[in-house]
Image (cartoon, rainbow, N blue to C red; front, side, top):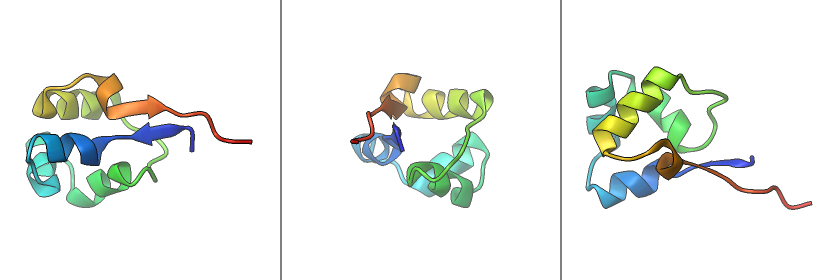
Length: 70
């Protein structure tokens, strides 16, 4: 996939657990895990905003574009 999700990096940098972020954002840990593993097909802007607020980051810190080889 060309979009890389850096959620695990941000969580580690902030010493925050996935369950804590899920509770803060108001979504299930399972849905957040799908995003973290890069298997999500979409993310709502309001969810993205809540994650950015909770992690004190910009959307570009969370998501990156990486060209697929080939």
